[in-house]
Amino acid sequence: MDLFCNGIANWCKKNSAISDEDYPIVIYGIRVILNTSIKLLGIFLTGVLLQQLPAVLLSTTVFCSMRYWTGGWHSESHMGCFCTMLIPCVGPSLLAEISGGWIPWVSGLMAIYSIYKVLRYAPCNSRVNPIEDVKILKLKRVGSIAEVIIVNAGVLLGFSTEMKWLIGLPLFIEAILIPKRAHVACYAIK
Image 1 (cartoon, rainbow, N blue to C red):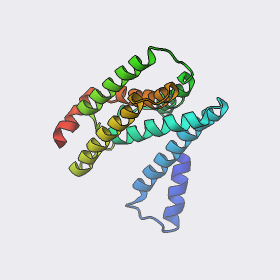
Image 2: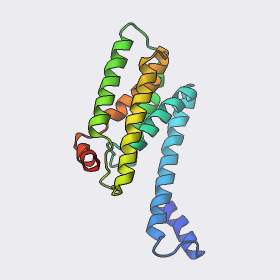
Image 3: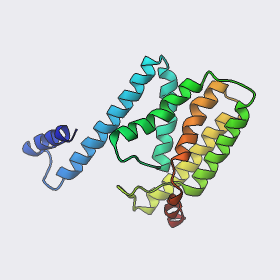
Image 4: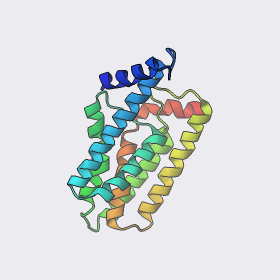
């Protein structure tokens, strides 16, 4: 992947599309776009192979949007990151057929934990690319709180059992991935 990213950046530099100063930024941007695209393609392909693409799309949307607002734990390898994304994006579609009288209790406990974890520890400021702008951190805090409340309201107020799994489980898994040390970033922005 680095060879491909460097090739594109070198081509841009050679054709005077970017300066020497912008070169590392362009490589980083290409790497992020390519890495994200490959992971999403793998997840959607898995959804197609399981004949669950609409469910996987919904779960992926919930997980990725919550991930945007809250931050969270990051794997140190591309494969680890892919597997970490695969579980909350594909897993709920596999559980969606499970039903029972215990589902509302489990959904409720997942919702309570998700709300607690987001209120207490989000947003998580990344070590790799820390957000230093206080306004952006405040916006992410408000966004994470709004999303966790809206998604959990939908889960708790009567969606079908299938929908409880498809939107509640990715949110719960993202809440699990928010490290407890993230509260330092939260307290700094209050």
